[in-house]
Length: 193
Image (tube, rainbow, N blue to C red; front, side):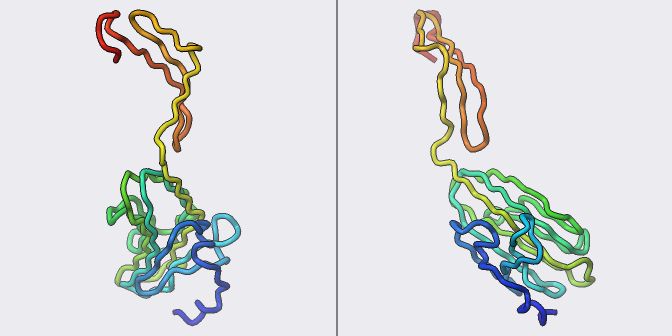
């Protein structure tokens, strides 16, 4: 089972994941490793170790949120029996099984410190496909400032005795949105809302 694994050309794990700014750990019955035989980007990717029935192999990193995570993953396994799981802080977020091909996943990470973990798990019997999981092109962007709001109209802000209409754009990690907001001071007699 594992005799040919040392012959596979190796790449450092952070490089194979395209995420050298993150600290990576790996474990289970056999560790993950970087390789060049299969990848989503045509260069390299991480692959689980060769595992036997009823075994597992995992890779993980820790991030601080809020932020957004992008990654590509692939599995070749016994469908609906052997799985590749993705969890955030121990909570299942997504999984794949069977012959998936390379799939992109985009996950919003909430505020706080979170362990991101990918597991390839085999059940108690039957081998199908390559019996492997792969991970590639991991990108995590932390949202450190919240949205940026730019007021484009009116210029300069024009205040009447009742309300003001602000128009502009708001942008954050998830894109740019046009906004329109009416601020009122209750017909000139109350506080601005």
